[in-house]
Length: 360
Image: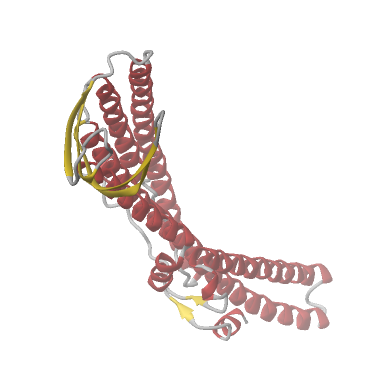
């Protein structure tokens, strides 16, 4: 029988056990965690623009003149600090921080989708296992009736056609059990794929399938889409990053101010005695760049418009999908009630089907 074979297959894992293991070992989750680390490191790099850069320079200074050549040893400390970039440094940091929030939201979405897939495979396994038990009970009952009919046929009280009906029923039930065993194995292997290769396939999902009831109305579900849907949140953050990129592009129209200093043995054309100090406050305004800045602003504006429209479309799609899933849930809930009534009337106890709405 299926139950004895399953219990001997390996340890049992509950839904929470599988989720916990998968979140720690799933490659997609690890990739999402690495993306968060990557964007955080990029933010630190962008913030480096706020600090001065200090370097040590040393080397020979070779000079060739008409009558002689000279070689001097140079060694000095150099410092550079960009004082103003048209607010571009600040905007670059904000853009990088937005990318961090996008990566974090993508990580939450990846975990949500992983857990949703796990629930689907987990309950598919339990549902198929429940049907196997039902079919095994039907198979036993059918065999009892067939044996009884054979005795009646031997005494001339039943025909061969009457016996054939039970034989066909036996064949149908055994074929159904074989198909359900295959479904169980496929669901278990799908869980292995979601959990990672190290877990192995020698385990059995264990638990009960809950009967989910709708406790909120459709408007209540739709009202929380904008706040809870990670896909909508990512689209919103990308639209916001487009606006920041436009501000950064406009920074090309502003002047830049840099402070540069040197101290030590400087080239002879700067100082004849050592050590010496050189300081420079450099003001630069690129008043014509071949319309490069104008084109960049136009590009970022178009990108912002695209991202905003993608956000609106994503929000509309999420709300439409939630409404469709809500209607499906209502329909399936009624079907479960009917099937439960049929099972009660037949005197057979089985597990109800599990359903859930994916709001993302």
